[in-house]
Image (cartoon, rainbow, N blue to C red; front, top):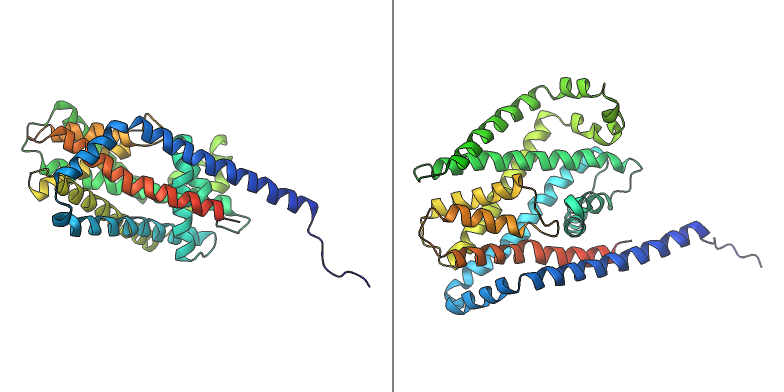
Length: 325
């Protein structure tokens, strides 16, 4: 009797075995890097334990629950953005978008310049034109960057009554220039794209980047809306973390400094590609030096925020990557 069952192609079996090996290697690499990162931050961990021993968990339990809830919301807004941006290539579900964002966060964590984020997000796309998604990712990142600049300008306005340094005044003027430049680029994006297409090095990536020019004003507004919601979620989360660690200044000023810390995280490339923790600590100390607060509490608060908002999702993303087909 003839066997009608199809035998899987040999190349397909080899590809599956290769991907399985890659998954094991990446999975192991994630936890090796996490272990080394935490090992380097042992003092932060001890400080975090000491700080929690000094505060009443029962009194701050509602804050902690709210902060943890905002983690899901924060990455949920980013997932919604990616779902909208990916439509130019193919329609994906919100769950797939959420998983892609977490896997991208994980792969970006272990790769230089966050390049793994692109691979993680594109993994769920089945289209042969998935490389066009690179342009969509860049567009989403660009809009989120612009939102950070807007709130950074507002935050500088809030603390302008303080004796801010010449360095901060220069940064403020630079931010205003970027805001104006961003409007100019948006209004003339078609002409700019046409002009750049004459350059050979741009033509090479034309297929990857063409999604940027395909978004209309309504779609830009939608992505901008979700970017603002994500930014507000993250900054408010930071405020509540600072409240738990008893940073005693007004809520509005806490929010402004949170925005400035996020701004510096956005505009300063992290020296250590494993995380942006050093940038957070530096910027937090820089701006809180304008107030009479305990610097140890500030550093511990930024470390705690990194733990819950980056480390935990990275671990979840690692397991999602391992389960991926």
